[in-house]
Image (cartoon, rainbow, N blue to C red; front, side):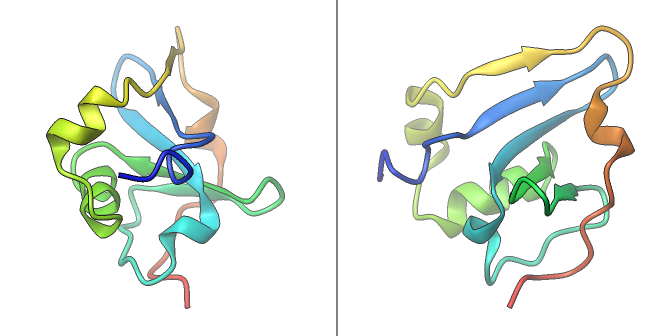
Amino acid sequence: MSAEILSGVRWHSDSGHAWLEVPLDSCRGLAVSAYSYKDTSRGVAYLEEDCDAGAWVRHHGMTFAQFREAKVPSEVWYGECFVRNLPRFRGALS
């Protein structure tokens, strides 16, 4: 597992859902659902927890155990998380 790929990665969650913030470029070649969001001005994607975040972990050659051991930081939002107001991710980056 590369520590470099986990640089800047963090969880964001509110009372209803969670998203893994990752560099947008790290999603190249990954099919991402419309339940994930992106902020192209910052170059980040927010991958929904149920499918897309796990697909990203596997896409980068990590096991879930390795990912858990990395102790990715998290932020809990009381009320609605800002992620919900971003544009939805559509399809894969080329």
